[in-house]
Image 1 (tube, rainbow, N blue to C red):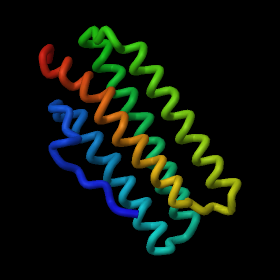
Image 2 (cartoon, rainbow, N blue to C red):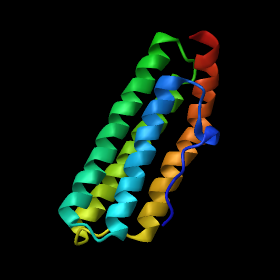
Image 3 (spheres, helix red, strand yellow):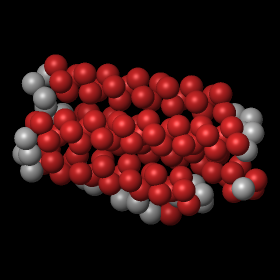
Length: 133
């Protein structure tokens, strides 16, 4: 599996959100390398947990900004956050129950999950925040 590469395509033009996204991309790549390098399943579990925890924190960060700046699509965006967290936790449970192995389709899911949310929902939020901040 290839690394995700941070570039301007993923920038929502709001520095504090972009910083969070860079961290999530870094964690995705760390997890990717840990699997490719055959690191212990305990280490992979810790990285996956950190990725999920950072994602939860990041979503709360976005939701705080949506509240502060009265983002009209905040409920839809928050619902998407909740669905993404549920999906990530389901993947985590699969990992724990399947002999602690991450499969290539799991990485494809994580990559799509991360980039799709940034490129669609977060781009709209970023455009709005760039106008009102």
